[in-house]
Every structure is written in C-alpha cells, then in structure tokens.
Length: 351
Image 1 (cartoon, rainbow, N blue to C red):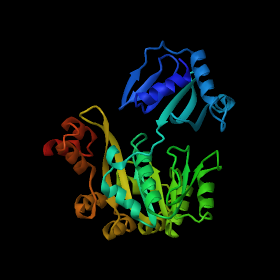
Image 2: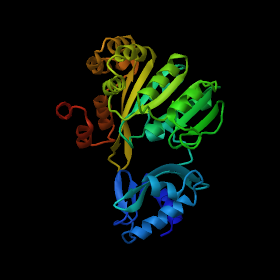
Image 3: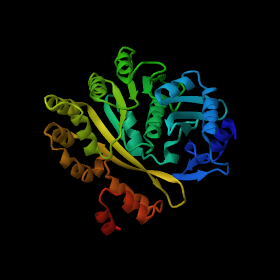
Image 4: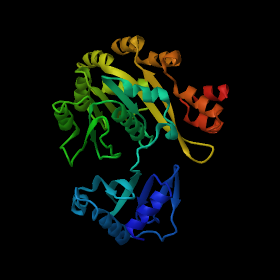
C-alpha cells in the first residue's frame, strides 16, 4: 500500500491519526477507536519504505535526521487532500510514524461543540487565556476557532508560534503571521521574545513548556497583549499550581502576583465518546474575577473549585456540571459521565 493511498483513505474515513508501526497492519484511529486495515503486518523494510515516502513530501526535514536523532516532528500539506502532522521515531530498531490528520477547513465551533462562553473569551483585548487538557483533547481545535473569530471580527496582527503548524489561517480582517518552531525560528522563547517587536495584538503560543516560556508569556500579557497558550493539565486549580511550581521557591510569590494580574481565563477540556459513536468535548471554564485573583495572590488555590461551582451566572462551569448537561441532552451515557467525572462517587449519586 502506497503512502498516498494510506493518507487518502485516512482522510475519507475521517481518521484522526494513522499508525505505521512494524509488526501490525496500517491502523487508523477513528472516533477514539483503532481500526486496522486488511493489509498484512508491516515488516522493518515496509515501515522504512513508507517513512521514506513521507519524507519525499517534506522540505523542512530528512530521513537522515530521524536515523541520527531517533525522532522527528514536522508537518506537510497535500493540495486538495489535507494537512498532516507527523512524528517519526525509532522503536525496537525499526522506524515508525504516527500521523495526525488536520483538515484544511477551519472547524465550526458549533459543529465541534465549543460553547458560546468559551468563544466569547476571544473578545478579550489583553491578558492570558489558557486552554488545557491531555494530549488529543482538542485544545488546538478550540484555539483555532478562537483565533478564527478574532481574524473575522477585528483588525489585529495575530502571531502564532506552533510546533508544528496545524491549522492554516488566511488573512481576513486581521493580519496573521504563523511561525513554526525549528523551521521559521529556533525556539518558543526566542520566537516569543521576537514577536513582541512585531507589533502584535494577539499571540498564540503553542505550549508553555518551561518557566522561561511561562515568564515571557506573562510579561507579554502584562504589557497589553492578548496571549493564548496551552498546558497539559486538567482543571483550573491544577493549571495554576503547575505554573507556580515551574518556578523556584524564591520566585513563587512574585509569580502569584503577576499571574493574578494577567490571567483572564482557564479552559480545561476532554474529549468524550458520544451515544452515536462520535466524539464531543466537555469543558470546565474558569473566568478570573476578583475572588479568583485574591485566591491566586494568597496561595488559596484549593478554594478555586468552589468559586467556579458558585459562579455560573458569570459564565463559569465545572466539568461535572458540563457532563450532567451533556447527559441530559442525550449526548453521552451515564457510564461516560461517571468515567470522566472529577468525583465519580458524587456523580453516581447525582445521576
């Protein structure tokens, strides 16, 4: 099976990921389920040949790189088909690849299940907005929808820093500069510092990976820019703890004060299987009000969940409340609601 046939079949099947690994047939991930093709299990020569064909479509990297370093990340596009984000790596002496399928068309927020409360946060003009969740929870899709809303409604300069680029945005009312780490710039930190000299109004930082990136991102938000970024955390309280814990004990008090000033919202999301065999996101939304700012400043992070629970009038919602709403709408089963709940025992009683 040629790599072009594999990519085409994945797109037509609405696959989210393609797995090319020795010892198993080509496998697609469709609605969180693995679907193996009827091809024979791949041998070492088969995987190397398929990976080599992938590199035929790439100018930013080479097969020599993965053979030398052991892994490689890049993205590429096939006109008329789709974009693909690729991770190639060595495993047990053979080459393997996992390919994420990214559609050319930007997703519609309503179609993919992003609530108005989340989309309204794109109307903010400054500060830090974080979208958090585990890998594959739909963070990139949520951010792409928010950036697209700004692009269509405001005359801003939007700078995105990603590793690698996923969704491609066309200039609309805004001007968009999209930079890929390792291709267009050396690192997130270097690109983020440079972006502040590029007259940005909005900055999308693909991931806050370390204390240096976090520090520059908060400074950017502090100086009047709207900054979006992600963390691999679940829940607003965990996210705030993760940011503060990235710094040494002697810096943490200063970081609490700075974070309390610049943070606008934390959106935490998960992807859930629906009753019709598809996927839908579930959200926890914390919008930073005076009470939350005080709690961050005074290191009372454990009290934030109670503020979210009691502030639905301000647009906040806990994950468990969101799950109950999905259950009442018939989108998910009670079993799914309990499995993804932050408090399964309490969720069982509510149901």
